[in-house]
Image: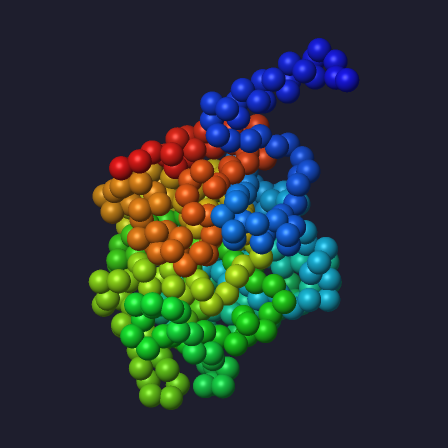
Length: 344
C-alpha cells in the first residue's frame, strides 16, 4: 500500500510520461545489462539518458552510473573520441571528457587505449595540440595513431550490399578490445555528412589509405553520392558498449571544425548509435539547423535510415525511451520527443 502523497507523486509522474513520451528518473535504478542490450538490437527499446548540466566532469560520472562499469575490471577498453581536427570543443572531444572517463574506468581496473585518425590534419599533431598526448601521461592511458598501422593490423570489412566499392579497412585493435566506448559531439557537417555525431564519428576508425596499394578510402567516401549510407555501413564493423555525447555546446550549422554555436547544456548517453543520433538531430532542430538536417522526419535522414536497414539500433522513434535523469532535463526531453515524433 502507498500513502496519499506517494500516490499523487506517482500519478503526476505518469501523467508527465503520457503527455511527453519521456521518463524522469532521479536515481540510476536500471542499468543497461547485456541481455537488455540484446533486446535493443532486436528493436524492442533503446534507452537514451539526458542530463541537463554545464558541469562536464560531474555530468559524465552521473551518466556512467546507468551502465554496468564493474564488468570492466581487468578488461581492455578502446576509446574512440572525436579528434578530427585540432579545433577545440565542440569541434573536438573536450579533454575533461577523456580524463573523467579514463579515471572512472581505471578505478574499475580497466586498461584504456585511445585510437584515432584525424581527417582534417596530422593525427599526432592534432592530439598534441589538443593536449591529449600530455593527458595520456598524466592519466595513464595509451594512444594509438591509426595512420601508423601496418597491413596486418587492419581487417577488411565488406558489409552486405555495401556502397563501398571494395569494402574498407577497420583496425584489428577495436576487434580485439573487450569493450569499446565512444564519445562524440553535437554538430552539423558541411562536407556532405549533414550531421556528425555517433555514426559519423566512426569514420575516424577507417583507414585513409590502404597500406598495400595506397587506395584512398576517404576520397571514395567524400566523393560518393552515397556518402551518408557509407557512413552507416562503417558501423557494422563494431558495437560500442557506451556512447557519451557532449551537448553542453554544439554547432547547429557549419561544422565539423567551426560553425554556429548553440548551448543546449546537456550530456547524453546510450549504447545505441541510432537512438543517440536521433536525439541529437532532434536537439539541433530545436535550435534551428541546416535545411538538410531539418528535411523530412528524423528517421528519413540517410545516415539513420541506412543504419536502421542494417539493424544497428532503434528502428523508429517509438523504439526510443528518453530518460531525463534530473528534473532540469524534463523540458528539453519533452521538446526532443516532439521533434522525434514529427513526420515529414
